[in-house]
Length: 604
Image (cartoon, rainbow, N blue to C red; front, side, top):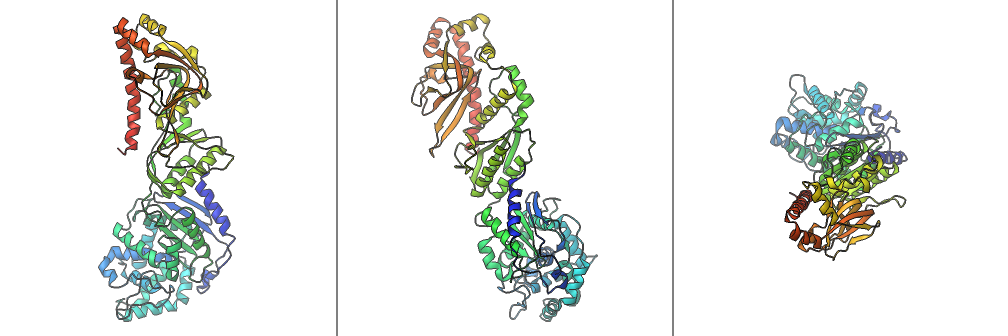
């Protein structure tokens, strides 16, 4: 199934292509010759999965997007104090190429403007291979592949970069640069001329989102404290004199380059990269700015709304064949479920469902084999569900429904609320427990692939736990005390304020219990299938306690009244004890399953 996230990016790309404002950076001759039609978007998650559309693999030069990475390398090499003595961290409020130095000290305002970036380059330890090679190798580590120089762009930069050379000499005059500035500025031109793709930049951004660890290679490139500083400066200064507007409307640390690229980072979740050469008056990609604004707005990526880490929300996943409900089944039925249970798959979710967590769910379901017909999302361990996650799950439900597949939700507390769906699609089924959702899937599988294993003729009631351990004579005695009771589909078996009249043994059909949650939603709580019993609490005089029992399909039962059990205790104590043991064992099996799910709801 095609991912709804990829479909959304395709829509965003098609819409963005209509925007023809801006022009490539002609003041660097080689950049001015780049086609303004090029346009790519790449989104990489903090665990390294990428979505990309358009010209996401087209090479271009990194330009000023290099600045935060060189700043991070300098911090790793020299330490915070040494770097802070050379370059400040204050927003300049000026264009990227302004001569913005602090009065008296000569320090550049921040490492995102050209003067500060040249200082960062000067602070990278050259090691044996030289400063530029050290930078190139480090950038390659961030991108997860070997990057190379665009000789044409480098020569174009060097032949027209007089202002940057002048900045180098000015910094030397203040003692900020302590050696010949010409080789340093040359290395700066080279780092800006490294070729990347939109895909590369999204991995580099995802490395920052992943606390400095490349999510593909697993290599640690920056420490946590360095990433914190780099992202902070990107947030305040990465978009130059447009930084205030950016942080207000987009709310992600970002960096642009005059080659047409933009990266944006949502810490702990994703790295975004956009490539489109036409620039606005601030030197930022016109389409890139708009794409990031839309992503922030549509997917709730502003740091204020998505402040907590949102890694994979999938705690575990398994098929119904791997983990059946545990309901009592005949041998033939168990064989069918074992063979065909793979068509139903359960995903137990946990934590907060923000964009990244919901993305991991959508990704997992989108990659399922076509044979999987039923998908169960268990939200018992989920704490918070963001609005964008609700929209993504609604879209997932829609896409599954269009393929004649079904999404089932275990959501007893109504965390998803009313999922907004197109009017032509039915709402998602909601269950009160994972057990009930799995039982529902099993019923569908048995209907599709079984014969008549659980028909009245083949219910095998004498093989059930109720009759387990009884000899044939005792079994017949017990059966003779039971009455046949039949209910139509949808008929109420027991009202919420009624007392249980006795023990029911299900021969055919199904019984469901439902109750009302604190938010007023009606929730399905449990189900009872052929071969199982309900109503054991009649033996202690209990009432339904707000729970309603309803027949699903034609319900045929054998009914053992409480009065008959009392009479049995007088007439045949041994048989009564065997009956009590069977009822107690079945009750504890059911209780154990319920307690496990209650423990999940309580956070244990």
